[in-house]
Image (cartoon, rainbow, N blue to C red; front, side, top):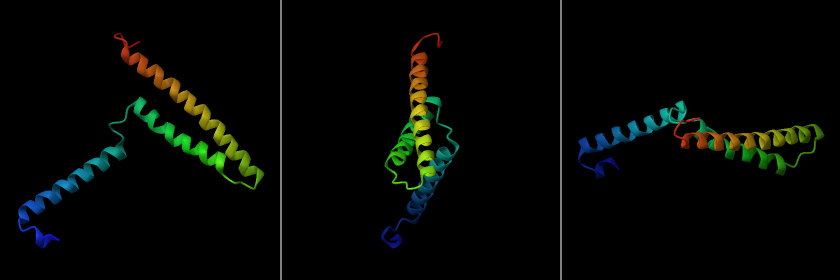
Length: 100
């Protein structure tokens, strides 16, 4: 494919730009530098929802494993409710001029 594009300097510049963009995005994702409290919780709610769904739908034969799945389900439901309440509180506070 490289021979199709004869301008080697442009090819190299595009390659460097693409690699730089990839590395930059990877660093941001891994460091979570752009994630604040609300964004974190909004991202965690779908994660917890998946745990609820898999715990509900799992065809578990061993009663000990079923008991563990039920505990996980209860904890995830409770944590989602807590995160939603915190999100509402934080978003409400950010709308007030005094920040309190």
